[in-house]
Length: 418
Ligand code: ZN
Image 1 (spheres, protein in one colour):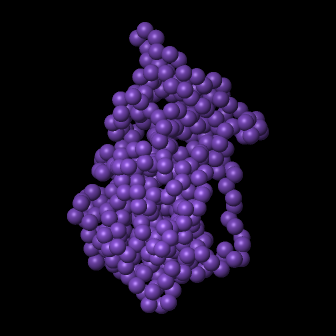
Image 2 (cartoon, protein in one colour; image 1 turned 180 degrees about the vertical axis):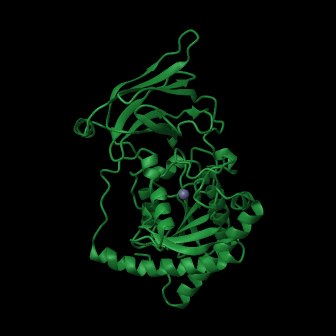
Image 3 (spheres, rainbow, N blue to C red; image 1 turned 90 degrees about the vertical axis):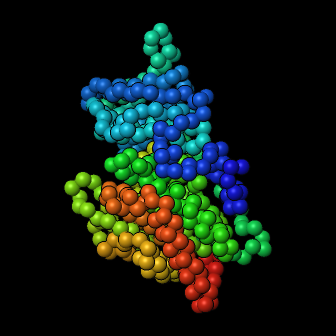
């Protein structure tokens, strides 16, 4: 295996992860990264038509199989393909035409690529096929969409539409190695695969930056010998939010740290610095609300059907556990801000809270760190700097040490092991 097998969970998601090498730099995890030559290559795309009929075309180096289906709320069309290499210009898909507002593409699992089209209204898939290459013409994927009404759209959805994700399976509990009492810390680099996260003006992607940082932090924590570290991903693969939470719960983790990098759109101001977020029902301010909404969109971006997702569980036991967990989360967030402040520039309000889906494990203290803003030149320079990454990972590691030492002193060690 390409990476240490110490703490790879034995579930389907992780088995899928082991197939690809580690992305060791921000550049290597881009969607244009070179892949083994045996994958078909998508090298051009066009959208034509109007609000009644829209045709989407993608050129390939050779014929591929496809499966197309629709998803509701928001309206999307998903095209599943075998793994392909998307060799397309930056900004491809940011704007659309006709019924297609925008589209995205990328890996959703080893062996599987996906295109997700955001559509402006209910649509019917009129045709979906791939043409063989012919003299002078590449192989072409053609998708014809026709406008329809909501009732027809909803009728055309499941049960015939296949489940779009397989990674939520593999729930076999693989409890910690027996006899190893060290607490489990889950590190969760945000986004991955088809979901790039925020993108800097330079093209550097959040998903690559946060993975690099998380791997450094893993090394720092493992070197101390005090923890077992579990990563939700170790390469450029998409992981649904619910699976990230599930990994922490299955392993009965003592701490969950999600790692992200924010961005502001042009004209939204010039915020800078790192922020630490915890879970709350109501956002601490408008910026926290905006951020949580963006981060919670990861599953929408990847074309996951959210209509079967269970609603918030209104269980009093969960509520009680959550209250205790919440206190631990807040305590860790405070420690984190104090330790990070020594080496990194912090946001002017460095501790906030909002309804992040990824922080919702009721029994695992959880925080989300936004390392900085990729939209800020100064922040981006730091985020890309090996020296800054190392000292900031050191500070987060110090905060983890402080968190567990005070918990042990207070007789609360491994409280979350339920
Ligand atoms: Zn993010």
